[in-house]
Image 1 (tube, rainbow, N blue to C red):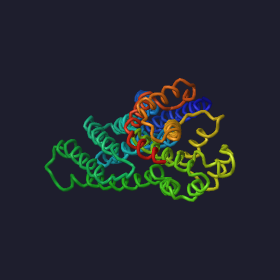
Image 2 (cartoon, helix red, strand yellow):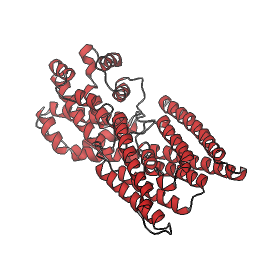
Image 3 (cartoon, rainbow, N blue to C red):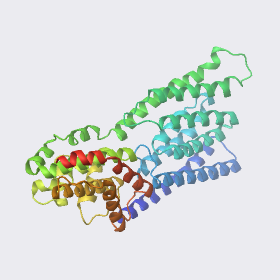
Image 4 (tube, helix red, strand yellow):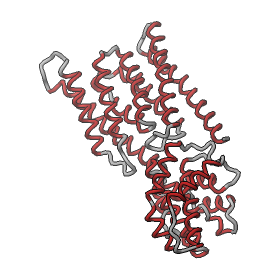
Length: 402
C-alpha cells in the first residue's frame, strides 16, 4: 500500500508539473509567432485541455496494464518526451509545412507510452503547430493519418525490436499522405521542385526514427539484456552453487522459472525479471537462511538488474507488500510447483487432478489479503490460471521425474 501511495504522489507531482509547463509552451509559441491575445488564450486553453486528456489516457492505460514497452511508472520519461514534442510544435511553423517531421514525434510518443496516449499526445502537438502556422485542415489531416499509422505499425514490435517493416510502412503512408494533401492540391503543374521538401522530410524522418529507436531499444528494451542472459542461464555459477548445496532447491527453481517465464511472456510482463526472481528466490540459503539481507547481499555482489531486486524483495521480504505483477506470477508458479512436488514426494505414482489442484491454489491465494494492493488485474489472474492449466503435461513428466 505504501508503494502505491508513493507511486500516486510521484505521478501527481510529475504530471502536475507537465501540465503547467505545457501551458507555458503554448504561451511561448503564441509570443514567438506574434499571436493576438484572443488566439493566445485559445491556444493555451486547448493545449491544457489536450494535456489533461493525455494525462488521463496515460493513467488509464497504466491501470489497465496495456503498455507495450514497460512504460509503467515512467512518468518523468514520458513527460520529457511530451514537452519535447510541444517545443518542437512551437518551432516547426518556421519550416515549410511539407517538411514537418511529425511522423517521428507520433511514433516516439507512442513507444514511450502506448497507442492511445501517443495518439492523444501527438495530436495535441500537431494541433499547436497547425494553429501557430495558420495552416489548412489538410496539413492536420496529412500528419494525423501518417502519425496514427506510425503508432500502429510500431506497436506490433516484440522483444527483437525489428523496425524494418514498420519503418517502410510508416514512410510509405507518409509519402502517400504528402502526395495527396500537398502536391496534388498545390494547383501547380507537377515538377521535381514540388517533391524536394517532401523528399527531405522523408529522409530526415527516416534518419531520426532510426537513431531515436536505436537509442530507445538500447535504453529501454534491451537495457539489461546481456545481464539477464547471463544470470538466467541454468549454468550460472550461483545456480551451480545452489545445485551443489541442494538439488531439491535447484530443481524447484528451474521449474518455477520455466512457468514464470511462460506466463510473464503471455501476459506481456517483464519475463526476464520474473524468470530471474524464480531462479533466485531461495538463493539466500547459500549464506545460511533465506533472509532478504542475504538475498540482497548476493544481488549486490552479482549486480542484479534493479527490477529483479525489486521483485525479489517483494517475494522474499515478509515485511514488504506484493505490488509488482511479476511478483504475483512467481508467487503462483512457486506455490503450484511446491504443491505438486509435495504430492509426488508422498506418492510418486499418484495420479493428480491438476485442474482441481490449480483451482485450489488460486482460490486460497485470492481468499487472503496477500494480493491486496498489487497491480495485477482480475483478467490477468484468469489468463494466468488458464496458462497453468495448459501445462499439465509438464507437471506430469518433469515434476514427477524429479
